Amino acid sequence: FDVVDVIRTKRDKGELSPEQIDWVIDAYTRGVVADEQMSALAMAIFLNGMNRQEIARWTAAMIASGERMDFSSLSRPTSDKHSTGGVGDKITLPLAPLVAVFDVAVPQLSGRGLGHTGGTLDKMEAISGWRADLSNQEILDQLEDVGAVICAAGAGLAPADKKLYALRDITSTVEAIPLIASSIMSKKIAEGTDALVLDVKVGAGAFMKDLDMARELARTMVDLGSDAGVKTAALLTNMSVPLGLTAGNALEVQESLDVLAGGGPADVVELTVALAREMLALAGKGDVDVEAALKDGRAMDKWKAMIRAQGGDPDAPLPVAEHTEDILAQADGVITDMDALDVGVAAWRLGAGRARKEDPVQAVAGVQIHKKPGERVAKGDKLFTLHTATPERFERAKEVLADTVAIGNAYEGPKSIVLDRI
Ligand code: URA
Image (cartoon, rainbow, N blue to C red; front, side, top):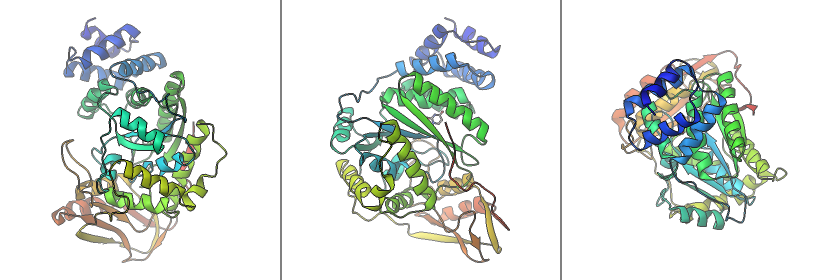
């Protein structure tokens, strides 16, 4: 094959053959196809799309670029969740132990944050002693003994995606449905889970800004999963406003602990319970009382066992920022909007996120939200508290939050966090 022919086919709106797809993914992984050639192909796909057969083959080729895990030796079924990424999305933390209470194993192979979206591993590392890197055998043992594991996805799963995702990030070719769907699903299918629930985020803080695009992405991923023998479902959920009342690593762990203790913000509880029900239903346990396990301490006990199994101390106090500043409401009224992207960027500027993948993150940095859309405020009430270890960061975080909150007469946004189900 000639890579220039492959690029030209897609540039001219043609269909890539299965053989062309297999070859180009393999050659790119081996370094035979250069980054600049793959960049051109990614842009051609971004502009001209791929049909269902092409997306399925592209996904299969990315899976074939690496190892596949196998959970079939476990004594219970596995069910996993993947979120397309958002601000304040700490749901994995309470969700994994909650589902494991019901004898369904949850392998949460997770990543770190980049840009304004936080990463699950960065949050978990706020816990004293907790270790993200586990071998495949350790993952299997923990799934058998505890039933839930949150850890780093090894480099062995879909290495073609790792390379391609980094390239898309710097060539403005991330937000294409065929590329997002194949990227996410190649990793999840290679992971070997029996069932998968996708949390597809919609709104200002998400890749997909509108509901129709998000529906198409969800449908594409559900088809890919089902065709590969993974029981797959998707919820479309609101990411125009941040999830819960915190964005930042230790702050989000604390909020997750509140949920595991039977409290926590209503939207975080609603989404945790909705996703748990979907994961359990796909694993054949549709009739259990999920909420009871949050109220009676079983989910918290599972969390503690999961943290201890990875060297963490679940009872150690979480780190707290030395420096905080409040942002106050400038008018009386009802909060009508709160831009999730701005809150994510502010948390990032305070030190919760990173600009380059080798940068360290602060466990303590982040944004605490005092009032959400729909709530009434009086001028001078606290809207946000900013947290950081490095107070010189306050100014740039405050700049981005200057117009984040709209105050008016009535809130007209969605009442429920779940917008649709596929
Ligand atoms: N998450 C991924 O893993 N891949 C994408 O392309 C987008 C989000």
